[in-house]
Image (cartoon, rainbow, N blue to C red):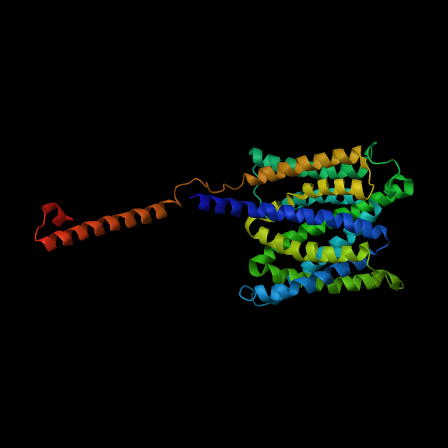
Length: 381
């Protein structure tokens, strides 16, 4: 019984451990990528190297482990994979990292908290989410969605005094009016990237229903993302061949780490968890990334923590978890203390004991028969 309960607890904890690992990996990626781009790395070239590394690492595992579950490639599945490779590796990441250049790593990762709200809106449009006006849980989802978007706007438009960090910062949005305009431009780029990321998550959930090989799907996304990313990088960085060179510094570390962890492993874990828990559950832990990045950015990148961005972050977190709370009430998880799963095992034990009892009586009967005596009760047995 204890082993069965321990196994059930482990099964329930695995999705949470997976999504927490995802957010930790993304947090380290944000800090490393910001440091690499501060050293002059092109975000277009970075996206190309990232997915090239991811493909060469994950492809052998996909070929070996997905032999039995990989379905036949069809035109419909391939077009979905092409769209996936455009939405996340090309559009989302290029706009996200370009917007990060104009803002900070903490600000960029905080803006990603609007992704669950965008996914919720898409689910309502596609009639995948039911809204009841008189239900408090439905109202929580609606209010939480509005609060999440409002918090993102507060973070973009409201600065306020410095709470933590020196008054001299590498944040370009605090130097002059032109840099403030760049900060707004960066915010718009990050918001478009978040929209593309939300579309990617929903399409990945749909694709996994017809192409359940998560490793192979990740490998295909990384391969096509590498090809498309190379085309974008060559166009945007034409006449500047020096940006393609990598040395043993933070830029090489960033490309290798993000390729293996954030594109290879995270794509796979994200797909596995979405099969059972859905896309909203995967993105519900985005505020954890914000907290980790804020701490790491303060210590390693000397970023400031402003009052306006802190207020916006709190509003986003409250709105996000209102959405998650309302969403969780749509499902009634099975009661782990229910006696139904134990009943078959109990029946087997009772039958086993009954057979042993009969066997004992039969032996007694044989022994008595050998002595020439038989009782009436033993004959009935």
